[in-house]
Length: 318
Ligand code: SF4
Ligand code: MG
Image 1: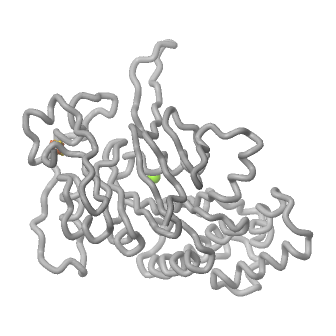
Image 2 (image 1 turned 60 degrees about the vertical axis):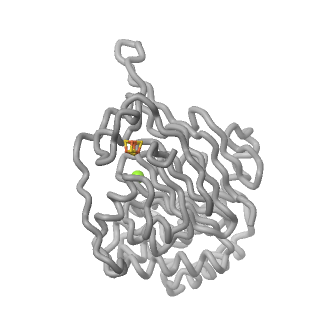
Image 3 (image 1 turned 135 degrees about the horizontal axis):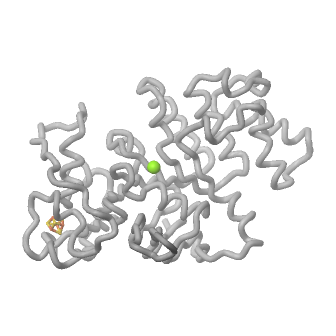
């Protein structure tokens, strides 16, 4: 299959200014590249603050990038013209983590779901209502939900509405940013299974952002691991969990409490301080890496592409 989405050397820098002078620059996303094939789910994992959400937001055109390219169906959309924006916003949707902040509590479910159609002038009043009822059925909610408000809904039901709203415009690509993190574990599986069903029914492609490696394992075909603004490893899901290459991925995987891991892995503990993201010298993982050696202090590792489409960014593999 061909790539639906491809990002190349994407960057987001935030200058820290004092007295009008740029003191330093925070490299929130620092040269990220990956591609997502049509119909697949790419998991994007890493600790909070590593730049996962910012990467997703740049792809969804919610924040501008500092540098780099974003291709959607082969077209560079990173510097899109304004007339293109509306068209694009139909094809790419972003699902936020917290339903409370992304849904207006004063609107009924029906009008929350209708709103994207109204904005894009799709259908008449009757057709819009019909679309709402069909969508409620798709996401497993009774038609009576059209007259409810979000405060009358459980956490799982609210997240279903957020997903439904994102699907009203029949997008091709969803950025799912921690879509189940706010939910009870018992409800998480229902929402994950719903997302899998919807992916089949609507031929969707997902970027699935999460800090939870079990959830990512369940959802993803391939996984990209992010650390301090950089992708340190990309691989198919099996390799990431059974034979992780990058020392950071190894520490993440060794720390998962799980039932599916066959052999017991010795847990590797992360030591050292998280370095200052404004510093660029050497490998950004060096202070916490159990395998760090001299070269890691002075030289930033470059991405190394191995067979089976695996990528790792670490001197141990050069
Ligand atoms: Fe560790 Fe060096 Fe590899 Fe960085 S480049 S992950 S410090 S071994
Ligand atoms: Mg986030």
